[in-house]
Amino acid sequence: MASRDLNDLIPAMKTKSEALIRKCRDRGIEMRPSATLRSPFEQAELWRQSRAREEVQAKIRELKAAGANFLAFCLENVGPRSGPDVTGSIPGLSWHQWGEALDCFWVIDGRAEWSTTKKVNGLNGYRVYAEEAERLGLTAGGLWPRRKDWPHAQLSAASSPARARTLLEIDRIMKERFEQG
Image (cartoon, rainbow, N blue to C red):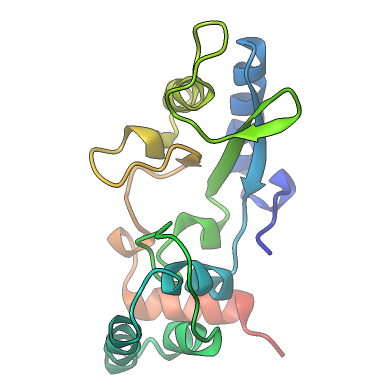
């Protein structure tokens, strides 16, 4: 299960995440972490859950052909999954594997609220969260032009670690950090 601990984030993201949660609270919005650091195996589970076997097998072949054997192993190892489409990022290509992303959910009267349109005292928690994230210099998933991800905030403006590193570098780093055994 993905970590919810802000201490698992890199220092710059931890500091901004603490400030983000505090600024939301100052505006009367309680946001609670649901994911900080996520292993590439957990990312593989999320990515696989909404994809057909053929798409998964094609991605595994593509990763192996590129020499990204550990990332391919992560996708292969978690086995078939089912569920809603919640991510477009394969293992290693989500900022969660780098400790540079935070997902939070909005809490109203002790219960998780997922609506991006519901308002309490004229405010929607996810809209406030996105506004405050941007003010802190974070990138808010709810403000992305496509594939909005309202609970998500990340340190980098780049959509993926693949914008800054090669797939082979990502594969090597993920293997060093997360290989089991």
